[in-house]
Image 1: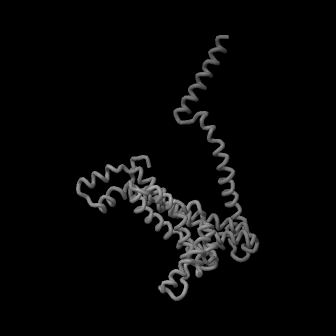
Image 2: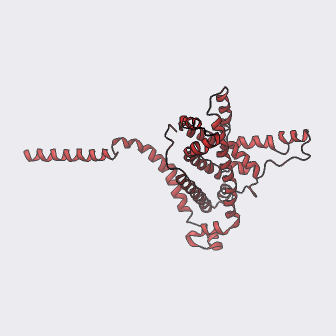
Image 3: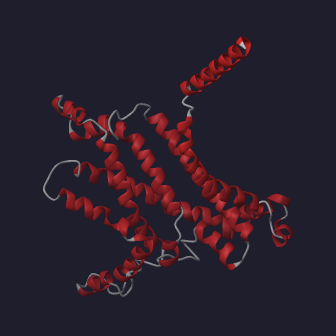
Length: 311
């Protein structure tokens, strides 16, 4: 009886010791709360990605006959077909300038709105209002306002500045304007959030030492803001790189705005080639990951500290 009791006590101590060791590593029953989020990610993200990736290695017979490559025939076709491959550069030609304009434009606006003045909340609300519109309503507004018979062209012709309507939409410029309108509020909110994490006393100390506005911004604010700018650029770039409605509604889908998302839609919706559509989607993700890695590498080389605040 004594031996059995001692055995049970030893087992209980061993179990308690194991629980203690796991708890020291942050592993306890509270992790069960993560199960719903884990299942959500598996069902809506991991499984669709794995299924699409596997589908990209199942090319149709026509693709195999025309391009060869066996299991990689879809990828061979992607790089060899100029109509598809050129869409990579067309997409980058839209996404990179748009993300850069949104980030660079958000910085001075966020710096100004960091101060306290009358009408600050109203101005901030106006700047983030395009978030509520969505890409379709934004495109419709551009067609009405900046189309050939829109208010802008009629106003310019009415005051005699132009003789013929200017082509503001249904081209590269129209898509870029749409992406800037829809992407700038996100950039502004993110930059404002990171600015709020920078201690204002640092800028005040620089002012006390006689540093001008530009030197204070270049040597104090910008280095501290660099991680936030990199993150903001990444998010706005991904948002612009996956453009679809704007490229179709206010762009030239057969020409200068033949983006990757449109090519995937054509393969899926018009040609019923699901495997090629999956291949284009995978290549879209690969391109985004490459640029994200480059931006993160730049961020780590530029500044390795922290903002040290609530941002």
